Length: 146
Image (cartoon, rainbow, N blue to C red):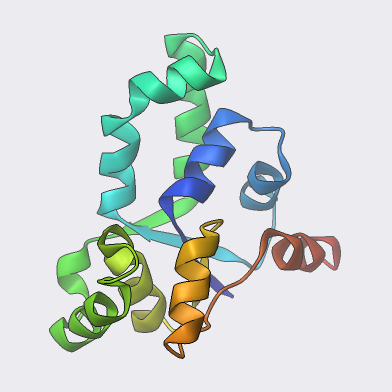
């Protein structure tokens, strides 16, 4: 199964590598494949100081946490996503949160599901007829079955 990881999910996993979210990502021998765009990696680098502050981790500990989580995610350059898919995603996300455009587009492009904890985004997209989300609970259940 292909899962697109958005920023809030990755940040949660980085902040607490013992959390349910991190356990899903770090699950060994899982048939779940995690993807994101390069935007996620840029956001991690941009907010590294905030992540350090919230986590209470030292620089080396934070680097290890980031590496643990990001090595399980395949990063895709958004320029590889066809323009029509990006345009459709922008139309969907524009009035909700334009910053999520690439994640929505990637989910459509790889025929996957979007893993996001952003309830406002989920409600807004569902109202527009886009419901390709997967929850932490659903992913956790999938990892337990393996």
